[in-house]
Image (tube, rainbow, N blue to C red; front, side, top):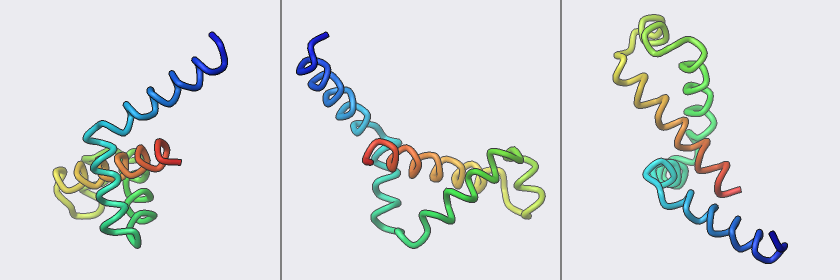
Length: 84
């Protein structure tokens, strides 16, 4: 593939990544709560390592709250990866 075509294809692909709910969710959270971005990422990584049930029990949280934190952290990481 020619260099110009590859660049155009990559730009188009990256733009398509921005047209997702996950990207929008990450962008919204990052814009509205910039002071909590690192915290939500760290918490989502901890939930990933422990698992939703185990993390919920250990921190006296509902599984739904843990899932929401996990999803928010994933969305913020996705947003950061695409927007970078």
